Length: 395
Ligand SMILES: [Fe+2]
Ligand SMILES: [Fe+2]
Image 1 (spheres, rainbow, N blue to C red):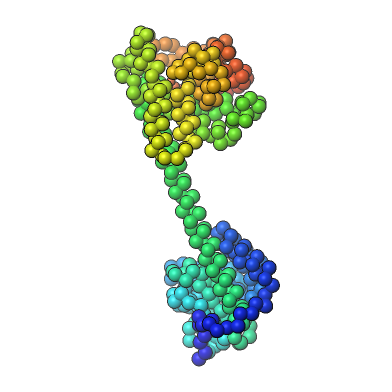
Image 2: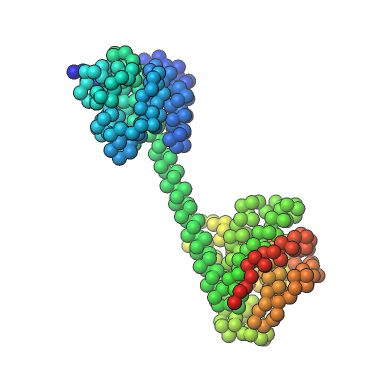
């Protein structure tokens, strides 16, 4: 019986391996993003550097060892799963210990049946992560002799780097999952808030969906034609599209007597109605404060809610902003909102034809609407008609 495990004290610290290649291997390994990356790095140079006749990368799968990859002079267990008690990696992971075996025929930790017919005579196994190992790296030699201390040290360093990489991968995956969940929660919240606004209004849910698509269509066309393109990156367009449903969220705060009045509003009522722009801004600003940090989505939503009734010539509300002082989101939404209001039937008015609606918007370029935007709108107006047809208001 000859057992040597985990005792590396007092060894002469010689390093016969080319330092650059070793450093490179260790660096590459700790930067690997995923199991495939670790396997690739191992395959590139580990066997050669360690001076072994074979290297296996083993993953722990409950009570089994999964031989994820072999790089050896002759076939071993590549892609096979062995019960933990039938492989030496199982022993190393169970005990969280380095294993150095000079002659496998004379070591009772070795499940001898598994090694029969293989070239393996001596080996080193290093668990990946000491606490609660997630895998192991095995190195084999075809001669029954004690593997050099340098080989063992190097394998240990490689396994440590693999542990770092696997911990990173787990963290990255967890972060991605949390981000995705937050994004899903945000989208659900927007829809819930927007539908709250809808249920109180004559305007239907489809108005919200249509305006959202008009906004995207117009923003994409503007970008394509080089109009305000510097403000319309793909991310910016995405934010406009996602935050557009909140443009009338402030209507939640308008009393029914005004919001649901079938006839024309008197001047006092009109003033109350106009306050929905400021109410919307304030509601979203509150959400932003609770977020504690800048959230691009909320700031775009706030801008649109606040400014979608501003007019190019400064006669809009609530602040009477003029020209390009009105944020691009508000200017785009003004066209989307107006087009949809014109071509849709409301309890107090019939629907107008597409052509009439386009004429009105074109006529109001430079007074109500940004003329640069209207020019592009006129070119892609058929797309607006298509969107309107796609999300019709059915009783
Ligand atoms: Fe509005
Ligand atoms: Fe609207």
